[in-house]
Picture 1 (cartoon, rainbow, N blue to C red):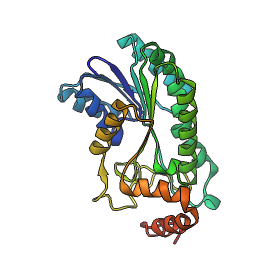
Picture 2 (cartoon, one colour):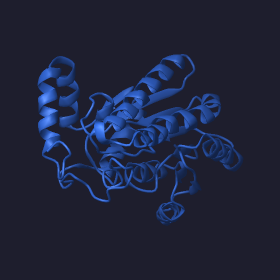
Picture 3 (spheres, rainbow, N blue to C red):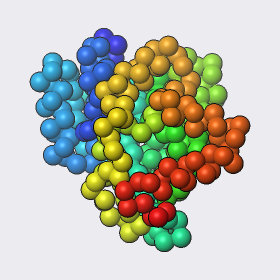
Picture 4 (tube, helix red, strand yellow):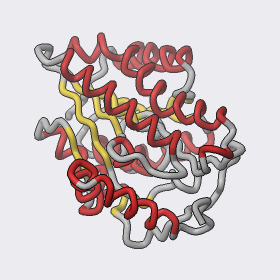
Length: 268
């Protein structure tokens, strides 16, 4: 990765920031994006303090205009893009029948359209160097989760888009990895939206025994290096995908029961 240019969207915290450290320590030049300038500046300072060549660019992934401007700025600064990591994402938790549909649109705009915008803008530059694309998806992209209908829909869409694109690019030398972490210790649940589109501000799950963002980042980097097409993390995640394929009736009940036990679950 020496001197290669890596863009990571939504990288001011969590898995995105962990990936910035992972690739930065391998010698890559790191570009991180995010909507919150203060958080982005703090993350950039952390990376630079660790000796990593990092540049933070304020960018709302839900905006095509801002995303294209960000990619153009990267080309002006570095002249190339070797790897795009579509990490920007937001979650939600609400029963579908009571949710404001704008919440689902907001989740889709960031998780799915954000991936589409960044990939479309960066693809010509990635093809030029036979680089790669990583999509940070979710187990919810394989198995729909109750009270997370919008989030599940966005990740299913993301998986389908990247799988189709990977096939289109089969003979171009561009590699695409769809990475699906299970429940990971990060801030995505605390930043999830409720039925009215307001940020909840707290996690509804015990994160003490979850895989850390740093471990997830290492596993993703290793999988991309090994040219894997799909990465499903954690035993729970692998079991969920398996049971959903072969015993989806049973899994309906297991998923319902598990998520009903969450703190303040709308299923209760």
